[in-house]
Image (cartoon, rainbow, N blue to C red; front, side):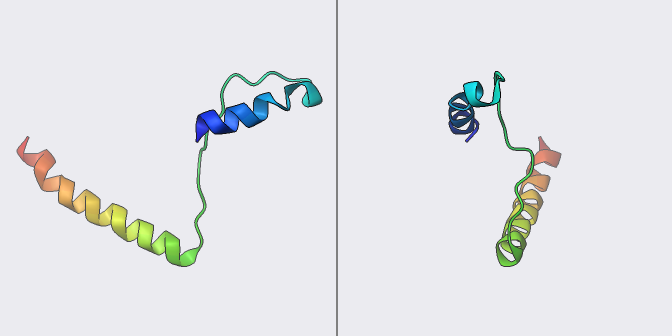
Amino acid sequence: MSSAMLARLKGKESEYFVTFSEAGVKDIILPGKIRNIMNKSVTTWGAYLTPVAQTS
């Protein structure tokens, strides 16, 4: 995602009189239902990994 974003920004450098050296995504805001599904998935995955991390 970052490389695609940087490529698009590079095309605008002369228009804005700037130079972009890197680009990235800090936060992604998801709509309600998708956010809830994602939060549940992350929580479930974390609970799954916790016993593995404790035995290592």
